Each structure stands twice: as C-alpha cells, then as structure tokens.
Image (tube, rainbow, N blue to C red; front, side, top):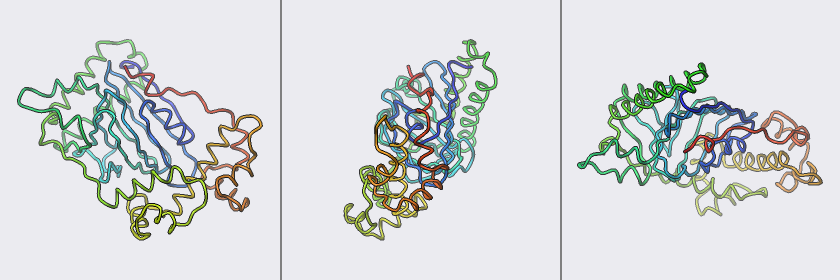
Length: 325
C-alpha cells in the first residue's frame, strides 16, 4: 500500500472510540440497532488519511491529536454529516487545529473522510504575506470551489481504494511520494492557506444547549425525567426538546435511555470474574422492569443482555496511534 495501511472493524461505540486513539473522542449512538464500524487507514509518510463508516447514527465529540490539523468531509456528495452545527460537503470542509474540541453527527452508514497533516505542513501553504494563526486556533469551515473540493475528496477516496486493492504498493516509496504530492497540490489549488477560504464557526444557542446536555448526560446513571434534566441544565424543557429534535432527531428521553443502555452494555462487555449479574447491572443503571429492559436492549444491540455477558473480550484492532509519527 502507499505507506502503511490497515482496515479494521468494530462492534460497539466504545471499540470505535479506541480505534481513533489518540483522538480522545466520545461516541454516543443515537439510533437503535447493532453497531458496526469500519475504518481504513493509510499513511503517506507523515500524512495520515482515513475513511470510516458507522452503521448507526452517532454523535462524536473530542479533541484532535496534538501536532496535527484536520480537514474532513463526507466520502460521498450530500452526505448530511453535521460538523459543529452545519453540513460539510465538497465546497465546505471541516477544518480544525491540533487539540481542538470538535463535534460532528454521522448519519447511519455514511462514510467519512479525514486528512490529518502535521503542523509543519502549514509552512508550505503560507508566505510572508499570509498569517497562519487562524488555522491554529478555533474551529472553521474551509470554503473552496465545489469542483476543486470534490476533486480533493475523490483523490483521497482513490488513494484509500488503491491501498486496499493493491497491497504490493506498500513498499513502493516512489508511488507513496507521488500520492503525497498529489494531495498537497490539490490542497494548494483549492486555496488552502488563504484567509478568504476560512469561515469561523460560532455555535448557535440551540447547539450550545445540545453540547451541554451531551456532556451532562455522560454522568447520568439513574433514571431522571426530562423536566429534571432541563432543570439541571438551567434551560427550558422546550429548548431542550427542540435542540435534540433539530440535531439528533430524537427526544431527550430517548437519548438518556440510550446512554444508560450503553452503560449496561459496556459494563457487561468488560465484566471481570465474580462481577455483578445482569439484573444487578441493569438495576444499577436505573432499569427496574427487567422484561421491558431486555426487549429494549435487544432492539438496540441485536442480542439479549445475557448474550453480551458471554461474549469474549473485545478484539484487537489497529488504531490511528499505530500509524501516527
């Protein structure tokens, strides 16, 4: 392949989060059904690109790896991927500096492309008349001509496809360098490095409400009502409902239920010898009606809690860390 490359599969949002280490990301599944993730990673020297796809609608939040900035978009046109409150596509790419806190919402079965470049590559796109500081702080969209943006995304798709189809390219350093140059040239032609190509992101009040709700939801283990959830966030119940419906297409009640279900699932997957049984774990996460709980659990994960309990330990898979320089 062109440089190092790998393809791996995950079977839970927890495994998927580990696969993008050291990207310290939190994933929250917000549609019912078993989760399956796939990731294809390619390194071109010290440039890294990957394409991943998740079977369920999922929201991701977290910090980028240190020392890298990112460009990203859907691998297909009009993918509907929400990046910090607006859709990304060929002419409007996600742009984030090292260690930036980002959030994006992935529709079900929608592949996503990401290009990670070490910060020293910024020097290639700037001369004395241009200031690279905006690229190193805050979240932005990178705006460019749709044709040039689509060409860049097509190039990334072609490189990943070539790597997966032709393993013998792995030792061909000349072709690796040629692919790297093509990616950098496409970025330059698209206008990367020019201030007019940037659009700073300012989250709307409703997106801010959602962000706070998601952060708080990480720590909710007991069953609480939606009015109580809103009160704890110091927002109106209507504002909270609208935020969830606009961006996630679910209600706050559904979200809280999914979070607690995933808490049960994660604990059952990583249950050490002598740990609590299914009933004890379910009760600890606020589920008292065990028959109803088991049915909802099966709809969400495609199996009963007892089957999860009997699974082997999570599989090994290659992460971004394995290829980062």
